[in-house]
Image (cartoon, rainbow, N blue to C red):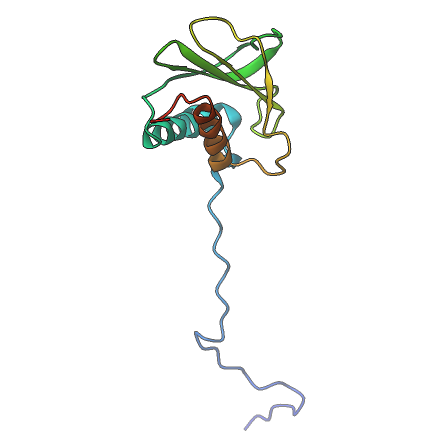
Length: 147
């Protein structure tokens, strides 16, 4: 018969309750997508859906790189068109949703003459925040729904 030394710990029974479950990996946030995929795949459809839900007409939206309205600096932008020759530009100074943003608006087919800083005080930029503030700004122009 073999003796076990008295300083050897006794085997511990493992039960399912004793095992700790490995933490589940959180799915990546929509904002973690590369900018060039985030805007056309997530931002544009979300904007269309929210504008329609607000009672506005279906906008024509395009995502492109080009000259920023008014100043002509190169930027990434969402160009939007609504009935009545209403147009807007949401401009990103860098290909990053957290970069500095401006918005320009015009009615009647003219060119915009003013750039407004857009979402300058926000620490964390999210899809929901971008969509809600663009729709809020368009509604402030009385371009959406029965105002």
